[in-house]
Image (cartoon, rainbow, N blue to C red; front, side):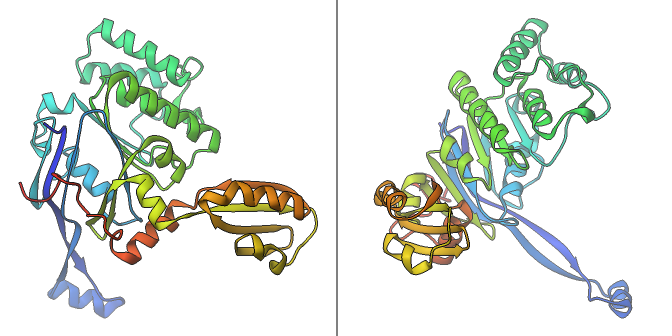
Length: 340
């Protein structure tokens, strides 16, 4: 039995529309007009125990709304979802004690108190036995290096330090299902890496099932083999991440810092020149020849530094949106369709 089982899920909102200006306000007062917004529109998928699945899409695509429905914060308009055998919007205590929702832009810690005080509150909320609380807190402290942080007032922590404490607070009850909504947003590269390592280790240690939303390709490629892609509330891809990248972005990006300017024509033999401006240049090269092209450029051009990068997730997903779906790849994996 799948830990997350979603069929025909939809969440629609009735939104008030008003014309601009004073007269628009007057007309709206006597005759209100509404629009039906389909935030999530008839999606379905299944996720097995221990899977870490990326949930991708642009702002407003329906990612956060879906996670809120799956975590029980919102009641679906149509369809059904079963998480660990529970119906999320019923918000049974035994369900809530097995899941967690972490939102990178929301704060659950008390701003004016040390993080440890919030940890103790969560212990009481989830009715965690003292021994289990101490053991889990010790493990999370080790994994996240929390020793110097837990006794500091939360408002005095940096964004990265606060996010580590947020994760610890959300995981004290050892949830079996994690919904992570942009957990690394706004963090520097070093802290992003540490958060990714922590999520991977938590998954390995406890076998937790994870749905992760992120605009950072590094988060997704480091943690997820499978991705769900949503656009305008509809699921347009469900499958292997590498297969999607190989089909939609069969190239890597070389970023050059030059010691002296070169022309675009001088760089064009090595790949598709995307940008060439003064002492910086960006070149797309076939994925399989990226290392060789970088080596050739180092020998032929006065290069101070060169990096080989994956294309940004926005570019790949945008390509997917333009196509509607990946050629020859179903939007639903076998056995994960909308039919119950």
